[in-house]
Length: 465
Image 1 (cartoon, helix red, strand yellow):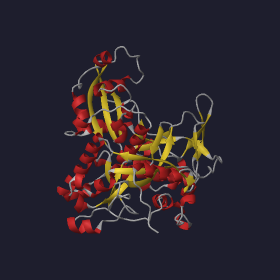
Image 2: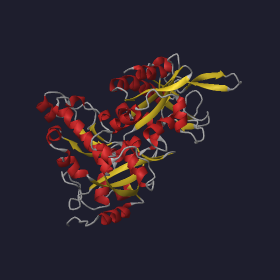
Image 3: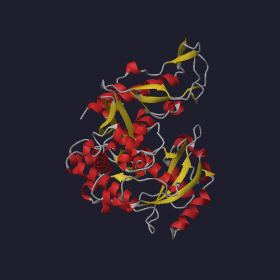
Image 4: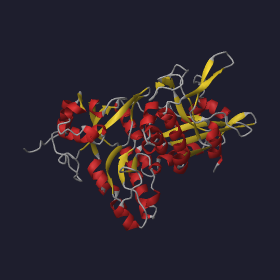
């Protein structure tokens, strides 16, 4: 029997709707989620191809719906307090080192295959197998002119690394929206053909859209055009996002707080006034970290106040993590590593001079992989061991108010010069479930925790030129 042919984008969207509301087990016509494969996330896209669109899985270089130039992708999202977010990158196609070196972006296999995407969505649900999760929606995606310029810059950066003999230094941190992520189990394999050609060990990779970029796409889809942008298409033709921001902010270096207070005159005095100063520098009205570019490029603006003695006030926190996720993940695929390997910080430093804060400097920074994969991994592995052994609570103490406080065995600040674990809940009743009941107390949940960067390390980073 011949496979169906779809003649329009609307036909594709209508057909996708026929599968929405069904679990992947119900759509699994070829029984891909059975036995040891029941947790095979890679099977979900094949199930949608076969069970919803009724065509055979293939590995053609062309887009799935070749007559329309549309590629089908299936991916999961999370619901968070800040809305919907993508949990993982969206793989596109194989990264062929030699082709990337020799193909212009516009002529590349990646762009030819993936410039139009039909994205099928499902929500990740803790404690559920993939078969129990439901295909719930989807959308058709094309890239805005501004997005194309950023992605083109990302592609060209990767291409230039190969051309300059630095293919072995390619990192997920190099780029903003498009990445060349490692592919294959174990993360230690080599791409034999590329290694033989270039004479240096090269990892097998895939092109992918970063999770933050896809989160930005989803936010804009449901925002009715209310997402602010910092840069525009014309600027991105000649500059990167970072270069545009640098041009704007450099003018204000050396300005003191009196100057910035005049910039926000008429506004209600905000608690986050330093963030408002930065927003004024960038010419936006809203929250910097919610702008289109900062979300899609996973840039996090952090304002840092340096006191006259050179010290900074506090450690730097990240979102609370799931104890269940930590227990079930390996370091290489952990949510924390994924977040940090792709995270780019914009540190904006205000230094107090003669009693007044002055805009001193700003810098873009990402944590070095060698620190993340040593110090970060050490904290993660120690945390995971504590959770799996049910060895969370080590004792109790009485605080100054006479309240009994639990003491835990999570990695402490003194044991690591870079990263540690601290509470992140509103209070002790703000908890997450534990994978194993605590042996001492029998507790099945514990106060929310998060990873922190130590302030001594942040101070070291911002003091480096």
